[in-house]
Amino acid sequence: MGTAEQTLKTRLAALSTSAVSDALDRLGIAGQALGIVPLDRSFRLVGHAWTVRYGPVGQDRGTVGDYIDDLGPDDVVVLDNQGRLDATVWGDLLTATAHSRGVAGTVIDGVCRDVDRSLTLGYPLFSRGNWMRTGKDRVRVEATRVAVSVGGVRVELGDLLLGDGDGLVAIPVARAEEVLAAAEEIERAEDGIRRAVEAGASLREARRAHGYHDLQYLTGRTS
Image 1 (cartoon, one colour):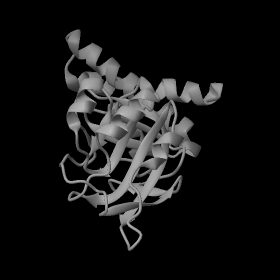
Image 2 (cartoon, rainbow, N blue to C red):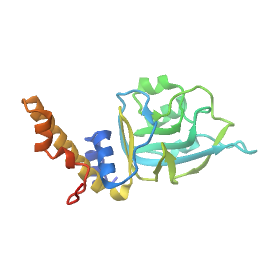
Image 3 (tube, one colour):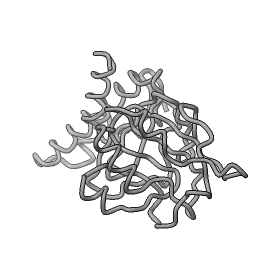
Image 4 (tube, rainbow, N blue to C red):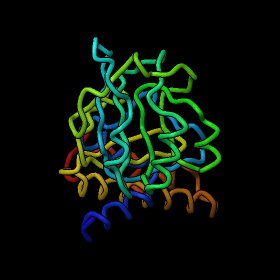
């Protein structure tokens, strides 16, 4: 990872998904993954997307997880299982392998299983839920390193992902700088409002002083 990429990742790690979500709205980018939540609310992940798209099996049965050996530190596994809740695509062996390789976390548009391993290792899992029924001989890997859909959001290889207790957001890597700048501005303003209220100001006064009601607009744009 280059210095510029590491700087972006460090800046993103200091933000909340709420601030990034507001920045995405401000810039007209659809990046909030609906229904994708952490297995444990304390889980956080930040990194670049490494994508996998699943489909139903055919006569050749297929495979569900051999791709894991291709991942490394700072990758986030992003599994598009079309939101299926009836067959898992992630379990104990994948969690153990990903954790040992320093993978930053896993995101699933679908469900996972063997959740105790993730909780014991503190390995971040974000999904639609968990269920024990295997995906073997039910789904197969259709493609890797391609554009996928997660929670209704298009995620491409290398996009930046941030996950916390409020959910998951995806940032197109080509627009990362402007999204981060907007999110940082929003967080600074909200921190200022919070400090002002704690010092005795009314919320109305603090919001007005820090331009709260204009934060969703681009510079120079009026309501």
